[in-house]
Image (cartoon, rainbow, N blue to C red; front, side, top):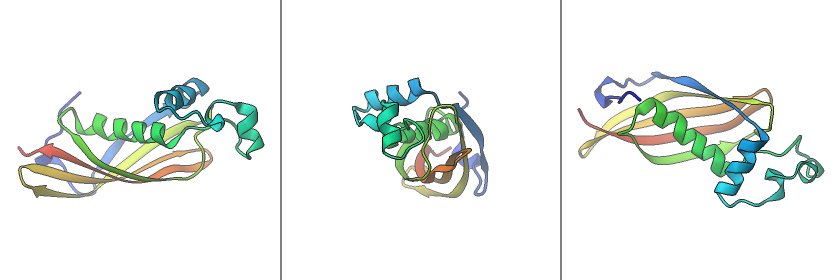
Length: 140
């Protein structure tokens, strides 16, 4: 993974898109890993009875993929300071989740560079998640 240099980051810069094939296994694994045993994340019949089209990804799993998306772009020196997203449509099996983002702002703070990103994850149903991520990088 290439290391992103803070000095080379420009406001308005687009982050290369990341596409995730959402499967039932990914959804259930994420729910188990985050100890979210709500049936809508593993029981198809229950999820449908609650008005969902199928089981769906929980917010902790979504946050994890958002973090992966931005750190894959920023590199191993990046530290995620804050993730603030709003959930929209569900991420269900068989739908590709496409992550996109753009640099909203940059500034120096103490001995690090602070980068704010606008991020979005969408599928054929619409926007699954949207919001901001703040990360830091060493200056230099």
